Length: 141
Image 1 (tube, helix red, strand yellow):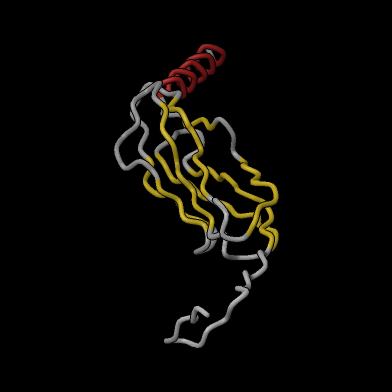
Image 2 (cartoon, one colour; image 1 turned 180 degrees about the vertical axis):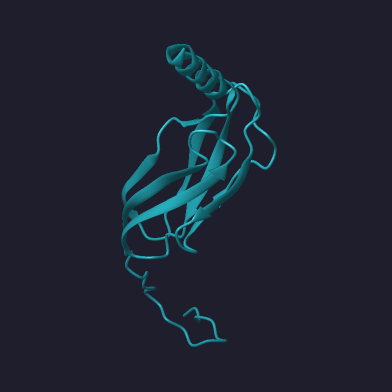
């Protein structure tokens, strides 16, 4: 009798998990490598709803103000893919390793963390061969 009850419980749990929403990312860490200050710090994390019910992302939050995520506000249908866009503020110099915490209605992982990392190198200030005082213009000779 106990074996029958246990088998029924496992069957119920298995059925529930199959019907749940599931979020699956193509990759969870993006390494920008090394790039110049003010370079392109944008990346799109592609994900898929592998469940059989709509997936709803309720929030995505960067670990600091220098990392800004944008996520789809509409439900993601089963089997469909979408992206979470992440923009890193590349005016900051040095190595970085930032996280983005995603909250959703996914059954097995309602909170998921994805990461961006890399190193921003300072760019030398451009120097002009002719410096003119403010409000004046160079004269032609």
